[in-house]
Image (cartoon, rainbow, N blue to C red; front, side, top):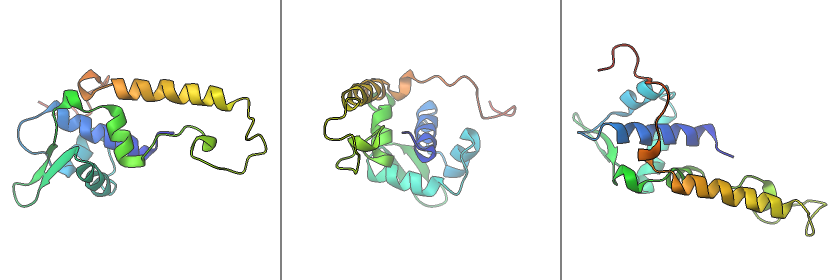
Length: 140
């Protein structure tokens, strides 16, 4: 399952891919993408640790992509924030389930998981076109 935190991370990284000149502040990204500002510092720290973003401190500091947008996939961002994407509890490892080990549905779940991972692995930042411009009426 994609968490809200992961959705915010995808939106933040995508926003940085839209305007590549210079650095963007976390406050600006939060405003433009309607991300609650209190969540962004932790998200940014995880994205920096994963090598997707770089940050510069100070008066003229900010954030930028650490790689070209065409080389960053949605799966890269998802795994940076929440680790392996598991749709069902039984995919995470041993659990207490009365249907295991011979669960008839596990094979279906595994196929669904594979299809979802393929979509996220094949979708690059440059493939995303959000329907609305969230920057508001004063956007240039």
